[in-house]
Image 1 (cartoon, rainbow, N blue to C red):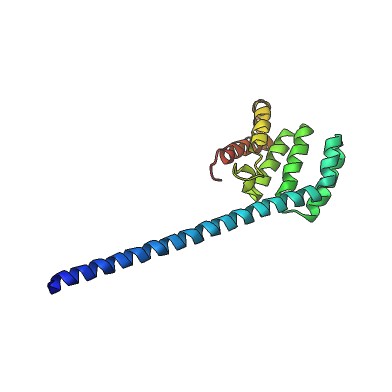
Image 2: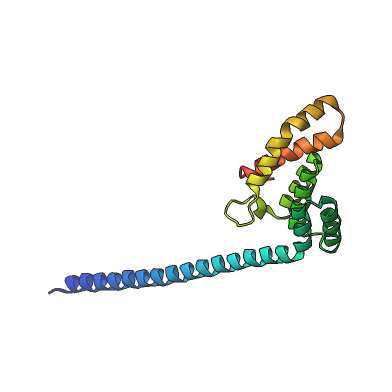
Length: 178
């Protein structure tokens, strides 16, 4: 064997070792990435479970009153809780539900919007907090009445705001941005 042949064999062996080490390194990085994704997924699941448990505990009295049909008392209790926890989006979801059951469509739609602006997870289908179907039902039941009211009171800013809120909610539920 001449020296050129020996050099080529040595280079091929070196390239093989380099490729093999790159494959091993890639597999190690891949397994770390999968483990990190599983950890973050479990942490996210725990976060949602904790949030739902906190909501159930915090708003227990409101939910019981609502179930009994005592909507005014439920609303009073809810306002007490919201005074202490003004940044809790679930409180606004409950307020929207109570207002809708009382027939205050424009206000209910507005509070759904506030809840979604505070916590976009309520319109993310991938989360257990998703209430998009509920909101679409409210919109479907309210749209005709609000458009009729807009024709009767063309200058009413509350009706215009409610229709703007409907469009906003529909965009967000469809997956659009603000």
